Length: 247
Ligand SMILES: C[S@@+](CC[C@H](N)C(=O)[O-])C[C@H]1O[C@@H](n2cnc3c(N)ncnc32)[C@H](O)[C@@H]1O
Image (tube, rainbow, N blue to C red; front, side, top):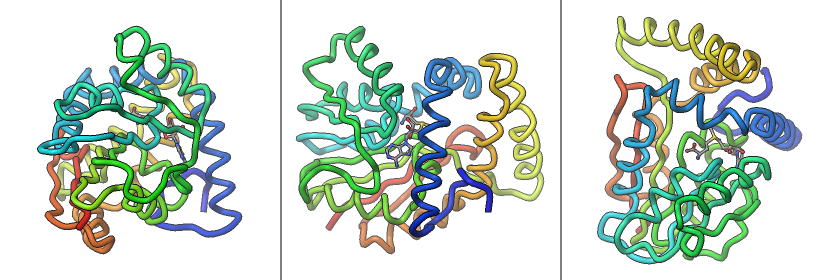
């Protein structure tokens, strides 16, 4: 199996190999990351993050965790929600965190967002720490999806909410193949034209192809013991927000 593809669970050396592959990839694309997001989503990613942050924090108060925070947009969206005291944004890649730190400084949220280097598969926090745990466009990139969801649930306090915002395989007999085909061609082309990196952006459609469909990800949330699990599709069904409550 090629490295770097989103898969439910891999073991031992494969975990380490994918972790290293993904870390190199995001180190390389860090500087052009925000620009590519804006182009690929037509600027919609900010609204999707606001929706995910609202869903994650609705009716809750306390500390929020953004797993694999990247350049910090979801962490900032969480910090702007009522009831949220502080947000911890964690990422494996220092280059992404440096950009997140600069953005947090520019937006005047320095005292409300803490950035930490760490691994989604071994979160450096005690059990039941956070009111909500969110991740944006990140679950495809972790080498062991179930393992990282287990970790997120572990650090969530009872009654807290887990939320994922992610690109998912498009379903539908006509729209599915059409969008998949366009995505496979256009994303690497945009990577080549905008940030001169076709190879890294060829990884993105592959990682979506290997990711579970939205309905299966919801099943996985239920298998982890989460309650009131649901999801909402966005962006022609290419993106989904999933949620569930820790009993
Ligand atoms: C597609 S970016 C998403 C960034 C951000 N959450 C967003 O909404 O734009 C994926 C992020 O996952 C991080 N990442 C990948 N594997 C990780 C791991 N095992 N632990 C923590 N972060 C990881 C990468 O460094 C990268 O910043």
